[in-house]
Amino acid sequence: MLFRDRTQAGYELGRRLSDLRGQDVVVVGLPRGGVVVAYQVARALGAPLDVIVVRKLGVPVQPELAMGAIAEGDVRVVSDETRAVAGITPADLAMVEARERVELDRRVRRFRGSRPRIPLRGRTVVVVDDGIATGATASAACQAVRAAGAARVILAAPVAPAERIRWLRGDADEVITLAVPEEFFAIGSFYADFTQTSDEEVTGLLRRAVLTAPPPPAETARTAETGGRGHPELDVSIPLDTARLAGTLARPDRAHGLIVFAHGSGSSRHSPRNRYVAEVLGAAGFATLLLDLLVPDEEADRANVFDIGTLARRLVRVTRWLREEPAVARLPIGYFGASTGAAAALWAAGELGSQITAVVSRGGRPDLAGRRLTLVTSPTLLIVGERDELVLDLNRRAQSELRCENHLAVVPEATHLFTEPDALETVAALARDWFLHHLALVGHPGR
Image (tube, rainbow, N blue to C red; front, side):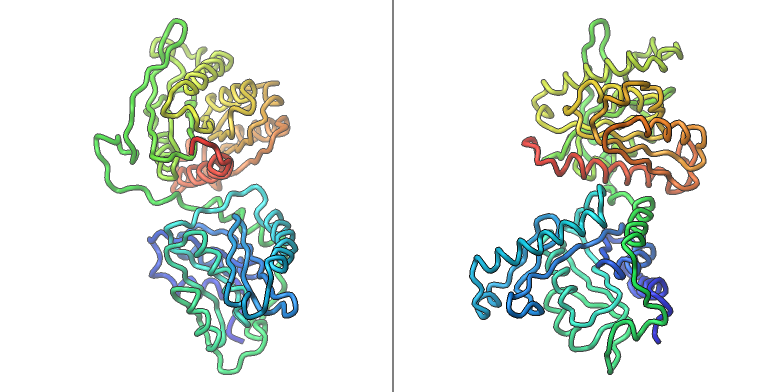
């Protein structure tokens, strides 16, 4: 026996790959057992974890012979050489692909649910399995992540036979293993405990990984021109009937969408917490509008901070103003609300309906939106600190009122302001992934 179980094997494999720590790496695990190993590798590297769901396209009369593979995200890899040798017609290929696509979609829904895929383009991707026998699935996974835009593909497994390693080097830039036994039988023979991994264990590990995933690497250059947010900023003044609201707009090239920030009590568009989240979203390709919903004279009266109706109506006015601005008019819009700003965001989303593609609440008070919660149709993510017990309870009650797609993410050990180590980074990563899923993938003509 080489390994006690998959967890121990993953820990050892993570140590073996430690030179990748600090690089732009994504770890992807092959379900089911490979995800257990990959979880430990991702922890060791401080890298995000995802699942790669792959289906081999086997030759009809010889299914073990792969003529290609499909993967989520409409990735399709086909070997024209194998098709020609096996005499596979376009109709044959279409029949096999249709059958495997049904099973692929079923597994994606089971393992991924509503979680978005982590972008792979231009990044180093470590494909992890709990062992390699024939190598067919590992080969398909490497081809799939390559087709998804990975700049470098590393295949990693605790154990594999030598001849398969040599063969897989045609698909991966590098193949890393801990053991290459001279005599190779079943993968399970190298584990003391090779108990079958359940679907629930896979989905549980993926959910836990989301809470600790780092934000995308931020640009290190900070200049006055970009205001430290990585993209040129523009101060805007948005007209109301009797006043003008101040905001700061940043728009990267080919933006996925526009995120409007609704700040909470005692905060403003200069809030360092929200500016940090905006920076992470900007690095992920979103335009952002940091906005003050009150003018300075109004902020002095605390009653205005809790006037959710007025804040929401102003947010609606701002959204309609954005629809007239040529630079951002065609971008799908999401709301990021903090504290009382979250209530205003949900109230406004309920009024605007499908015009708002997604909402994220950070330490928010969605309960203050009252009966308006039942009108919200935008997918909503509620993020609360584990130690923010009162607000957590209020969010749970509010969540029961929502009729839209929603999720409550509890950040371990965090308090209301998320000042604990890595807490705000977790908030930013959760928001980024929620918006990537619901805005970046809508195929909006403004992209």
